[in-house]
Image (cartoon, rainbow, N blue to C red):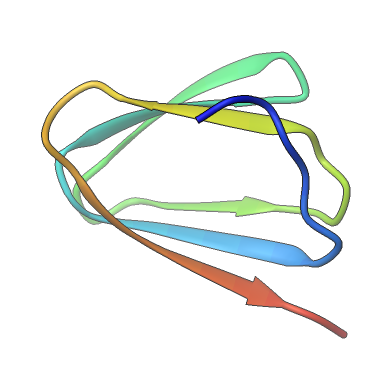
Length: 61
């Protein structure tokens, strides 16, 4: 998925697989059972490195 941002806090849970996230230029590999948190307006992109299942939760305050 190409670079974008959200107007809310975002919580990513990888339920299965391996996903590479680029957040504000820094790469993070997130695997099964890991959680990634992003702040509002952080630019991010993602690429599945394996067949993956993720849950994306946007938290507006």
